[in-house]
Image 1 (cartoon, rainbow, N blue to C red):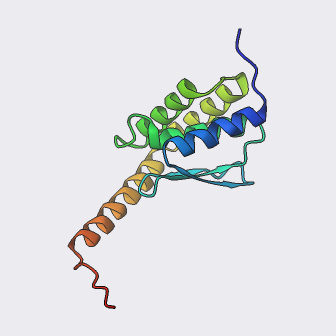
Image 2: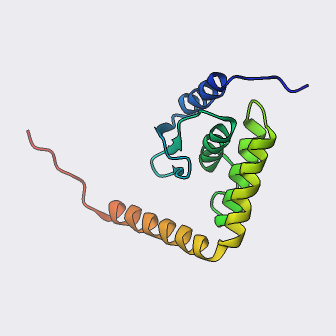
Amino acid sequence: MTPEFTITDLARHVRELGERYDIFIHYHNECEHARAFSFSNEIETPFIVSYRTYAIAMHELGHLLGHGQDRGCLSAERGAWTWARNHALMWTAEMQSEMDACQSWYKANRKTEHARWKADRNAFQQALGALASAPPAVIED
């Protein structure tokens, strides 16, 4: 039998994972807007008010903690959802439906999303290269 957890329990779980892995979590009210930022170890996710929003938050954590995040858009999505499902306190039909819908959307839009993912990754790598080659800052008293 699957244990029952309250929405408060689920929100606490996400908060505790953020604290354990030093991930800063930005909460907001937009259910369709969630992102993970590996370069700053933070996520943007909806407030956890349902099983669906818990699944979304877990998925975004999965982008930072799961496997396959450097192998392309579809692999990254699969890896993040696999991590979310494996580390969630519970997994409901509503959460599975969210996962299935998101994966279907990414499959249908894979070319544009992969291009966006690749451009974001390349821009980040260029910025890191620029920082690495910049002269050290001099602080004067």
